[in-house]
Amino acid sequence: MISTSFKLPTDIFTTPPKIFSTFTMDNYTSYMQQADIGRRMINTVIVAVGAGVLSLTLGTMAGYALSRLNIRGGATIGVLILASRGVPPIALAVPMFLVARNLGITDMHITLILAYCTFLIPYVMWLMRSFFAALPKELEESAMLDGASRLTTFFRIIVPISMPGIVSTLIFSIILAWEELLFALILTNRNAATIPVAIAGMAADTENGAMWGALTAVGTLTVIPVVIFALMVQKHLINGLAEGATKG
Image 1 (cartoon, rainbow, N blue to C red):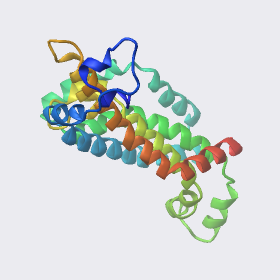
Image 2: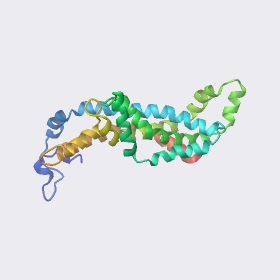
Image 3: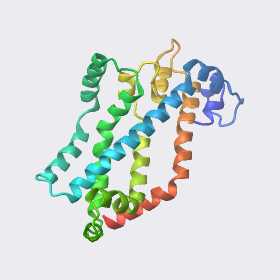
Image 4: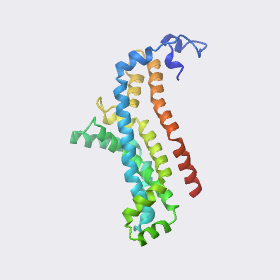
């Protein structure tokens, strides 16, 4: 993909294929300006990070509640929330569009963030519920004996020691939101459109077929931030996965 993004259109389909051919940056200049990739990239960052943080906040607290509080039917609630991940996304996307259109909030970042939370929160809640269930209850009992409230115990004791799991869950949530297409395609037009929408447009909106040079260029630009982000937080990711596997 990376090598193809630097090829001329005539070299992309050369037979036999060549790894090294005439070098060009046209795919990263003319096509990028036409598709407004810079703006789409900013939209993707805003939506992915916003959805990841919001779903992590709500899902973590929900997971802790199901893990520690004596909620009647808590196990059933957890299973039902997880089962909601099995609902086809298109079954949610169309009603969401109708609601957003009636409220006048289509093509907005917050609309897409809230839409992403519908499939991210169950994912976060289930992961964090399993992580919290493996922690010894004596930690919370000791703190509450010293006068700490349940909320104080959660934020000052549980959250810090669960940070590896929280960070790894946040990473996966951001990546899932980063690559999502269906909701972005239905709920946005221009102002809040993301990179996957731009890629879909390049694959279809042309009389001569897909613009493969531009597609590979945009694909490269889409993957690079995720790779850099993963490299920056790989220590937390590995620690979170290792602790989750050990405690699980």
